[in-house]
Length: 391
Image (cartoon, rainbow, N blue to C red; front, side, top):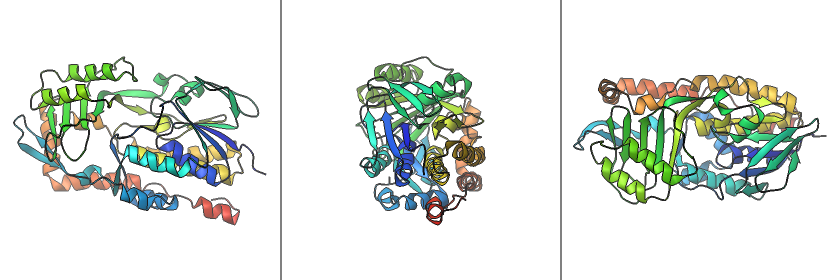
């Protein structure tokens, strides 16, 4: 008889619904709580790399739909202050095998899971109290409830991690840069263009791509839910920058979809504690490293599969989940997107651009990224369940 059948998941972006898909397939009762009032549309393009990721999408029955909604994956160019090309930034460098807008993927996952589990939007967990038989959760808006297990799929600034493991500062390291995105109506160029000055990058143009920013800064204090404050922070850090920066900043001030966050890295020696587990960026985020969504999908598949194989025995399942994911995450920890996209010196910018003019260097970096994406071997949990045995 299966135990621990009720699961609360915090976060309805990517990892949460992926986990919910597999848990409900194995007979668990799932509730997903999301702080935002509705699914967030738009967002950056995310990609899946290698056979393991594509096989997982196929096992979930969404590979064809993801392909149908995929982005075109256009090349971009680094330009100088006069708009002249310095180097081509090929989509193959960042796009992986399959690229899709974050909001589109979130919608696909929501559509696949909404009838099998409970979604609660516009609410957030305020406390978690573990007992011998479950976890008592209180919420900002809803009535208190008790669940057998709780999973944080709520990003680098995870609320569940803070409540169950400890303060964010104990696990999250700021890497010296911030990044931002803004949906703007203006098309500044047919091809996406990126412009650098030391410690700053700004990008705009291309097919429906958001304006994009990366800038060096010490840790900032601001309200992550106050869009107007974020606009002012971005504008302040780009004051006096050349190229078409002033035009892009003006467009951002008119935008109703702006996002700003730190480029940070989460480091933990385990992703489970008691009856609580973390998946995706909540446990091993590395901003803009290019592995986040793929890792979240893998983590949801592994955690649900191990719980199902263990008959809901969370202690056994969590041990296996920690083992598998700690080994897989190891290969993704060295990426430093901020330093790469917004080097601090003119020489650093020149060296970065040189990389894109030397095909053999570019190929080497791409091969390394693909190798990391393929570093996990996924057990066929549905087949193992059908056969009644463990991996």
